[in-house]
Length: 80
Image 1 (cartoon, rainbow, N blue to C red):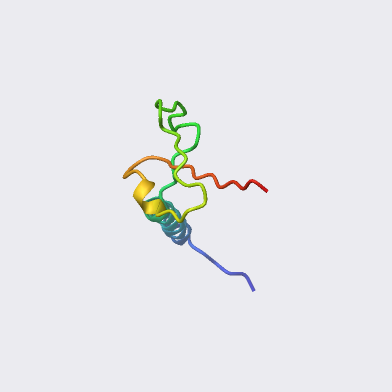
Image 2 (image 1 turned 60 degrees about the horizontal axis):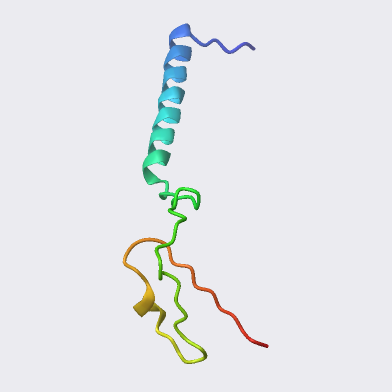
């Protein structure tokens, strides 16, 4: 038994599949979470005095030392 499919049905089906694919790609572009900027894109030069020791064993409120924008590197060390 042969299945007969008209040329028109093939064209309509192909167009529908193509429309679904394009719609999915467009949807994915809109809903994709934004990527953080790469480290290479960030400024790598430091302003004089931008590195500080903020504690030598005391408790520290880190939020008080974070800038509103930009990158912050926090380094923890120990003397043992």
